[in-house]
Amino acid sequence: MKDKSHKCPNIVLFMVDQLSARWLEAARAGACQVPNIERLAARGVTFPNAFTANPVCMPARSTIATGLTTRGHGVLENGYELSPKLPNFIRTLQQAGWRTGALGKLHFRSHYRDSHLNDAYRAYGFDVVHNTEDSCGGEWLDWVAAEHPDQLDNVLATIWAAHIPWFSQYGPEKVNLAERIWRVREGFDYTTASCPDATENWYPLPFPTELSQTEWITRHAEDFIRQTPTDQPLFAQVSYVQPHSPFHPPADCVDRVDESKIPGTAPAEWFENPDAPAYYRRHSPPDTRTGRRKYYFADIAHLDDQLGHVLDVLAETGRADNTLLIFTADHGEMLGDHGLQGKEEHHYDACIRIPLMVAGCGLSGGHVRDEMVQLEDICPTILEATGQQLPLMPTLGPDLGDKADTVAVLPGRSLLPLARGETVDDWRPAAYIESYNAVWSVDPADWARTIRTDQYRYTLYACDNGEQLFDVQADPQEQNNLAGDPAFASIRLGLRDQLLELIILQDYPKTRRSLFALGVH
Image 1: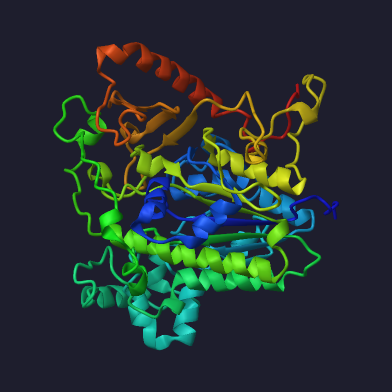
Image 2 (image 1 turned 90 degrees about the vertical axis):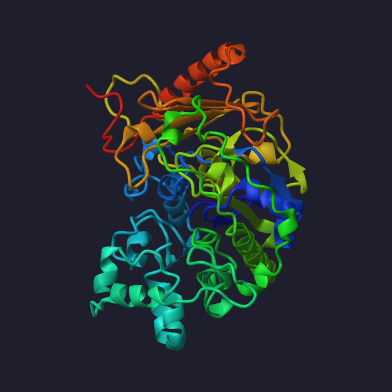
């Protein structure tokens, strides 16, 4: 075991699915009370300009684990799977003596595989796995069926993915659970007296809160922390499914939302605009439904409660002062802005900008760093905090003049110098975001590539499908597309040139996939 005397032996990565920085900021501004987010911010550093590498679950989560770009790890979109053979910080910590736990959603594997993935996820370096995903099948659902069978139909009403093949032959007994799910959902009334506007896409939780995936994940996280010997360092990935759609928070959390403080919906500026990218014009009309917003914010309130429980257990077990806590998300959620829902190739602020806070281990609290940071930076941050490193690139033969320890391994950089308040003169001036087509498309015209600076967001759609250029300082709602404005022609070309360079650099460092050695004859 390597020396464990470094400053931050414990790491807790608090992951939230589909949480936009835009909406968390609105929550902190009064849409719902988030005292534990405030507690975390007071203890650490907030990065308001944090961006997802690829705004969909599997690519973004693979980037966090490996520190690699989308093309580096090869998980281009949902449906690709992360190879457990690639180096990642989880296995690195495990091999160095850390006890590693995956509590909740991981999504390194496709939802279309069998739902019982605990053993498969141990291949990535986790000692303990209690996995539950968007599809709801697996350990959590089996626990409900065994311990709370009277609530099983209410739980099945929340499963949106009954079309996934293994639901038709579920578990060792090959039960046709899909048929039961469809039957329950068909006649299910999602409304309540206090939530008459509920639909199958947003509704109050139809079963006791303590049975929810959210609280099940928290209980396993608490157990993992308590059961880890005090003289052994731990890594816990505490990863929640909510607020992934459908939004279904506890009813009491819906009551905690102040709808008057929820921001107004950004209009769909692209609709019927001949200068808008063809990508948008060829899609369906704007989705103007906004009823889901209060349920999304209610999910945020519930998640804030869970963060508090995790922080309390760290204090209870004497780990509060020697644990680095990272709070982030894989991507955002449009939530009706610009007439759009979801994520993926909609590179507006609500989709691509994610929350990121780093706290604990002696960091000064209450600070904000405005640098452009990315999910690629989380892996090197954890490695620096724990005094570890990924394996060096393999080299062999006389052709490579560089020494192995000088060959780049990761594209990102540790956030700890920024978190410590240091000046980093050569920090990146822009963030890069890319999307391939969503799972329902095979059309490269859906591919988007974006550069985001502190002032501009420039996006290029493939196959001559158009461009977007927004001055996000003067136009934070992204309503005035300047891509065709002659007054901004030089700015557009400059950003396009910078984007081209960032696209090229997505292949740096070279991918390790199938790499035997560098510098061979």
